[in-house]
Image 1 (cartoon, rainbow, N blue to C red):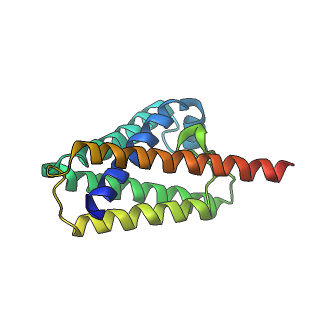
Image 2 (tube, helix red, strand yellow):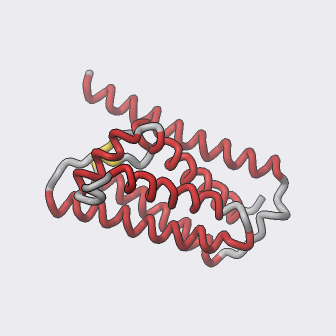
Length: 168
């Protein structure tokens, strides 16, 4: 497995996991959208649009013929994430980021910018690195997906320990 294939599977897994975790915490994600002032009339529509785009991004990344469409959707999502951080900073509001639903609630701000930058760098690298996922063994793809999920779990666990240390 090449680094580009791993990054592609990593990005796909991250986007699908983010979508799933948002679906498991719809009330808090709706609250975030309302605080940002978007989809005010019906925040559930906003939840479904954003989650749908994240799912589509992740799924398209697994097909060679259309993975660039997934990258394009990811750029659109990244632009939306950047706008959300900009709006939060501009209005000086404390808005909870629901990047991974209620698994890792955090305030929109500097940490969010770092996550967005990492997603953007991976997206740009994948746009220039043209590799086929078809020739990759399914077991290797599964391992890359499990590593990606482990990264999410480790990040959530680390955040929990840091937050607990602040309380104690």
